[in-house]
Image (cartoon, rainbow, N blue to C red):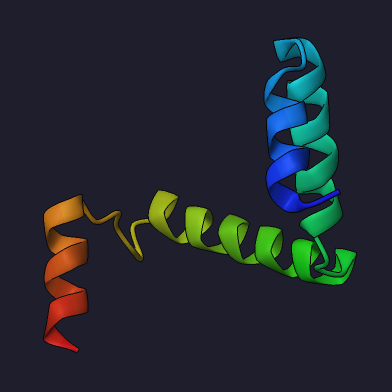
Length: 71
């Protein structure tokens, strides 16, 4: 079965079944090790604490993009 045939078959499925299939496919793409997820969460918590303590601040979209364009 070709990819186009699979897509056509899937599009004919009920939306509940398609949603389940999407979930399974997305889960199959997540190849990051758990340690990486933990490290990302630790960094997010560290940054949040820095904001709460006044050592850092959040950027709005304009400031964020301005910073990217400067580099």
